[in-house]
Image (cartoon, rainbow, N blue to C red; front, top):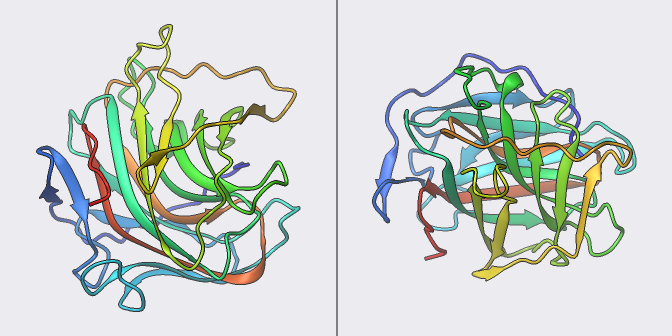
Length: 267
């Protein structure tokens, strides 16, 4: 599970997002051949080999995709692993409901460690804070903490990071897709319609909604966190952030990332 945050740098392409369907959605196909306007580097590796860049090695569509390249180092049984990501500030007034979609390719295999792929963050009710270190957040990731199939898809609700715990964890029985494109969709419904709390995350793989046969609070001796409701999501993060290590050099490609207030779909 996640335990730490990384410093950010000040580099940014600046500029505007790309609108897409349905109305109000934002899409990024990485066709600029560089980080899209508005995205900037955040996690910078945590001292492990690897890099995050936009290149033409494996696009899902068009000519370019976001490439988490040659991650290596550490152990699946110990905290610490390569983390390289970019972040994006959403337009003001985005709202409390965030649907997302991304195509993800993993090679040579889904890792057994926790691999974060995407998260969306928000200030607690009544707060105008924007620093990443004080924001609650939803996450989509892969992991295999139950020792079932490698890289099971999972969704998590976190309090601010660090420490990002206690986590409200949901794990599917769908093993991570390797050596092919997987369409991942998610719904982060932060409206206070679940007994006054933000809703549990939902997730889809290639159009089919995932079930959560395994749920737990991490660490195991912690009380369940209160999923504080959302006024507006304000920050996105993508790339790959490993909370444990890797036994083999691993690559991911992310393409056709989109978010909006309604479901976007795989095609």
